[in-house]
Length: 172
Length: 172
DNA sequence: TTGCTCCTCACGTCACGTGAGGTGGC
DNA sequence: TTGCTCCTCACGTCACGTGAGGTGGC
Image (cartoon, rainbow over all chains, first blue to last red; front, side, top):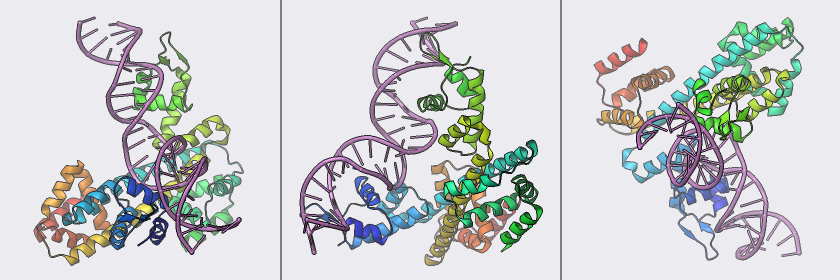
């Protein structure tokens, strides 16, 4: 038997997540203690394992509930419909990425180059951006349009030498 | 001067979207008619144009509001932070895609091949999936793992000839 | 009169997060 | 007694969508 926080910790979920699953009937604990504490059994644990797995893949809770109610249908419909949804989202994100790159390019050619170096670092600090994410953005930019990327870096005030150094780091 | 539905139609937004923007103070109409109808002026229209543009790129309304309040900061911070966010989302989606493909593969090797042809078409019908999306999924699958894709198609009950025909269609 | 537009609540969505106020267990 | 865990409301998040119930304009 597990208390709510114990079983939550096993799957790295929050207590409120479990409370929510109980409230919508997705995972009702096996029973309650004398004082009303939720008690989860081994079967609950196995059920939660499946829930956490599909949740991690981005499957909506309602579909997970449907599958758990009729497991004989198998996981393929779940997985395929999630694949289709992911595809749509990726397409939308790619379109946005492209439009953003075009706007950055247009911006770069409109204004004269100003020392905007602080923009990126200020932004990074504000958003708590790690070195890793920062490089990932440059990598994306480079992949989408190497030329636009170089222009953008120059626009931010990087010197040619600095740009070459950054690009070398990206290759690793 | 535009009434709410007229200006909404110009930017292909819904009336409730405009009501919401008013309620949060992002776009307050210039004035009201005697009977209380919202009236939007040309300046409102230009403001909404910017809002709709950044919204289309996925920028949160709060950040859009911040930019409109201090346009001298320029659009670069907005665009860059959105780029970073997109990057993170794409990574997460790719991870999910990979995990799903692995699960589909595992599923395929576990069970004996059953005539599951109806799964895809039933799924497509349920989700209102168009022919285009359907092909996009196969394209993604093919790109990620051509071999897994072929196994999966065989698993669904496609014959070798049918698989070859589908793959030819994907190349177009 | 009809059909369309407008108004203001107020609640629903999705998957939780975050207190508030109070109790139980070791 | 202290620190941790548990409980039940109830409200907040994000960007709207969807009625309900009523009025105005052509």
